[in-house]
Image 1 (tube, rainbow, N blue to C red):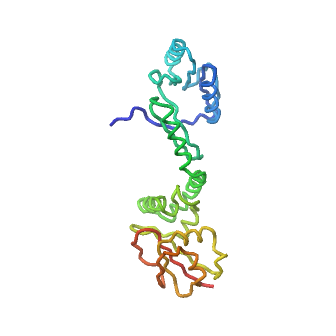
Image 2 (image 1 turned 90 degrees about the horizontal axis):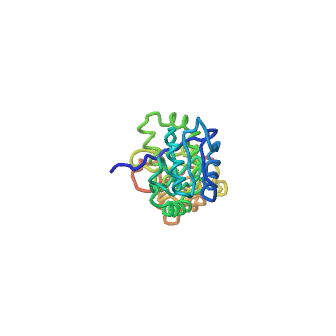
Image 3 (image 1 turned 135 degrees about the horizontal axis):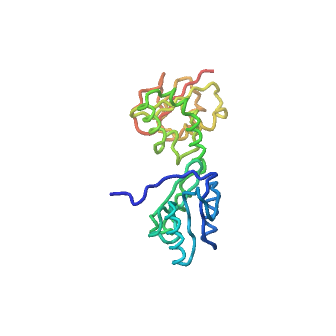
Length: 256
């Protein structure tokens, strides 16, 4: 099935965009363009995009035709048949942007989907994206093979993974330092120097609380193990296992 439109993200900061019209619809488009950093004008020789928010149909058609004749791509509010491009409903978790478009079929449907996604996508999503961007060099060093790097990230970002974008707040550097990823594995390695469970970092305490099974050396205090899920299997082990079990496994060692 072919795409009726090609979704793209256009950087408008400092660029001129023609906006014609007045009233509520025009003001809504003005606010959106201003958020994107566009320079809003009524006429320009350098602009490549235009939005027509004119209520009168004949006047809107004439304005759109004139702009298109000058080579601009035009959006005509509430008239999808005249549009070269449409403006989606947006979920903003900067730098993550989710755009929902219906090809002009129903702005109401796009808005309803946006509201659902607003509730689903955590506010920490943008922070995770920034962390991943900042960790590019460290990711390449940790996983020099592109295929291995892709698999490791895929596993970490999967549902229930260490970097699950819909899960608890993640820390990319912490994952890179302490997380072992590989085919069929989901293993978190934890090496402690304090017997006091109150000295656990919040991230380590969360991993214990989420673990399906806890491998641990004999030296690990029971007070630490008590922070794991009550129904998590506890397995005595001297070293991290070759884990091929589903879910999250945690290996805990204690060396004061």
